[in-house]
Length: 275
Image (cartoon, rainbow, N blue to C red; front, side):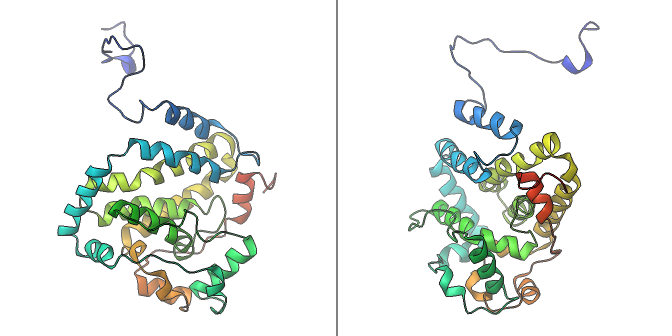
């Protein structure tokens, strides 16, 4: 025992007759996900493979690993003890507007900010394919995509790579704050934890100049998620014409500060070489 380094003690590998990798982790057992993890953690950023494309790859891998019947059961059980969650599903509100519907929103309102950002950046306001959800999980997934850009605005996260950390960590905090079943909360957070992992590891490895900015964004996202109401369940059309600070108060958004991370985000993404 004394000859074994302290940190290496306790390792007891199991034998197996399997000719392929076998693990108790379904994630480790997925070859393409293993490759994706190494790829997104170690790569540098470049225009040949933007971060959005990385997430597009991930979606199919995660769906292959989900037990959708069990997730549906957990959602149904959570609704029995979580009135706000139950009402959200009962209302089953799905947005179907276009960017043109926002053009009359005044500057400084939630809708006005979104219209200006989306039109100037040539953004598609539907970041997930438009479809009619048939299951509770599909509804949750669709609404998560439909409200993501609003979460940028409401949490103070700029529409750039560093600003992306705020809604990511807001989600990771708010879901566990407002969902009682922690296994369900975990399922609802899988995409977010994989998504933010790219930023955390790559920033430290390749872009340490903006690490402190990344920390500030993460801290703000966590703070908002823990302190705020579950405004990710809100009907965002209700605050289109409301000034941002009033909308935050109306929706129970607490701890938000508008952070200017544009130049840091451009540095991380490779659009600029210096700060």
